[in-house]
Amino acid sequence: MIINLITYNNSTNYGALLQCLCLKDLIEKNFNCLVKLNRYHPSKLVYAEKYRPLITKNFNKFLGTAKKNLNVYFWKKYAFKNQFYEDGEDNKDSVLSIYGSDEIWNFKNAYHGYDPYFFGANDEKKKISYAASIGRSTYSSLPSNIKFEILNNLEKFENISVRDQNTSEFIYKLINKEPQIVLDPTLIYTPKILENQNFISRYIENNYAIIYGTVFSQHQQTLIKNYCNKRKLKMISVGYNNNWLEHNHLDLNPTTFYNYIKNSKVVFTSMFHGVMFSTKLARQFYYTIDPIRKNKIESFLDTFNLHNREIKDNIPENDINYDDLSKRIDIMALDSKNFLIENINKILNDKRT
Image (cartoon, helix red, strand yellow):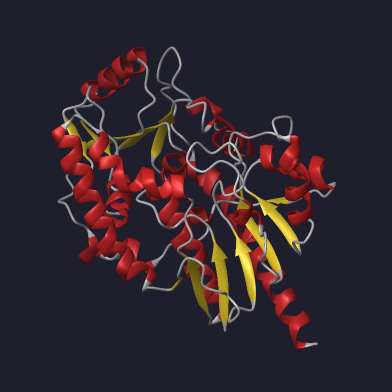
């Protein structure tokens, strides 16, 4: 049995790759099936990913990004085992399609904008969405020339779940159905490759802080430096080049990235999946607001009452009580898994009758 999964996967972004892998492996574990991904990629995104290393004047950044591309390539070869439909290949051998997670419905995406493919256009299979998001898009910003097409496609879904409140409101206003809000796949499943020490591509030190993202004001940079210096923590930027830091590890594969978060003392991030993995691994974390990621991060923080982690005039001294938080996440994780499993089973049972 083959299930078709439509989400971002042809990327070097840690969050995009890991949400895809977590959802793929979770489905395969529960249904004894093969999940196939599609290599389809909007041309703008292909261009951006392919030539990004060439458009920087910083040689170390160029070299680090090139190494990351290579390390991620070999990691993906093992993690996804070539389970792909080639671009344009028909998915007739699959029994259903699952759309999500991630910002596949973000019609204001800087790389590909509106793409009907991610809304199920021309997909005649029965389909559901899991934790799909419109990112920073809103119902009020929906262009009238694509509104009917999106509505028409989404009404063909058997059921819809979304990742954040903003997307929930969008769906309700558009098709008059209230979708279930579920957790990002990274919070409900851990693929074996993330715990596989053979895939750790760089020595992981002790007593360090992780900086993940680039949206840190001059004031926030000073606060982070003071916080770490006071505690004698080495500051390591992962995945991105921050020229205000001495240590920038740009070449990590996703397993190494995961274990850098896991073994850190604290995480400072402007990235949605920086918050996800810090929470998953019970790390103390602090975040800054990136306008592009504001909606999805704040929805999660609202759900679990974590707004006191934001870096404003200072860095809060209070620690997260993970004894309580983990219990609340576990409850929502179970509801999220149940949504996925019950809706897949419903489609499979309908096909048998």
